[in-house]
Amino acid sequence: MIYSEKHSSKMRILKNQAVFIGANELCSLAKQLENAGKTEKMCFIRMNTDKLLSEYRA
Image 1: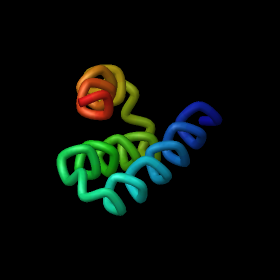
Image 2 (image 1 turned 180 degrees about the vertical axis):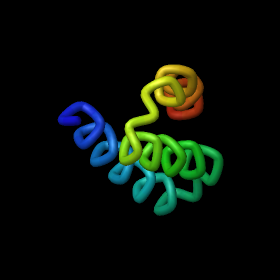
Image 3 (image 1 turned 45 degrees about the horizontal axis):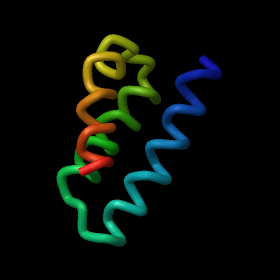
């Protein structure tokens, strides 16, 4: 539970920053991962974290 709360918090921050700079794809993925953290969908988080990091680095 603690991991998913921290994950959701970090994704919320990233989502808000992505909105600020107009990175819509990153924002969308961060929002999905934030929700996955809230509902403890660890499989979704594991499957999409690399995609998020790639988008972040682009």
